[in-house]
Image 1 (tube, one colour):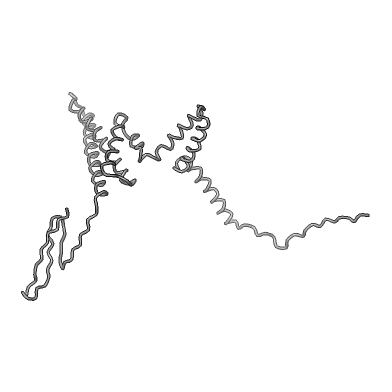
Image 2 (cartoon, one colour):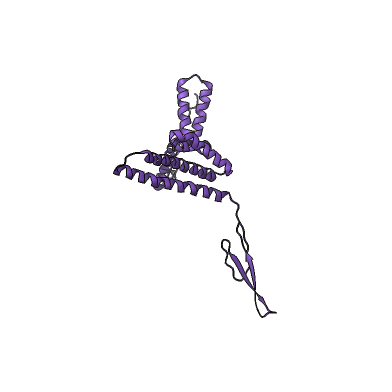
Length: 229
């Protein structure tokens, strides 16, 4: 007779696997929820996620460019990702400007960038700020010109034109401030080294340095004019 096959059940481990600490389990769950929330929120505003999504749609459209649904989806993805390159295309600047002055705002910003040789994002943003401020100057100047042509006035109109006049002054100050800051960014730094016992340096001021003159018995005065230009 054939031998009987016996099946043996392994004995249970004497030391069971340690259970995960409840506090550590809660931390793991919170980290997973945080990761899910971060990924979900980045889909609508994170530049990397928007560009990857746009690139995926572009590849799909290139395979089937006759698909109207894909074409519409591609336009939507492009509009969503357009602000990412706003400093190069002045897309955001144009959106913040009235439609009739949008071409001027973009061209003026490009001219400022070329004039001041703007390279960094800060310099480009300052050029856009100056262009936006000058556009507001033009808008409120048109408002004040209408006031001159009006043949009647009222308490409401007077209040409106007063506010418009204040906004015109504010826009002009913003424009001057942005241009001055941009010039300051682009101007080379000036290093002045003064060695003196007593010195007071200011614009177009004189530096007085006193050095002892033992032969004369008095201090010898040395005068030097410092011109910061």
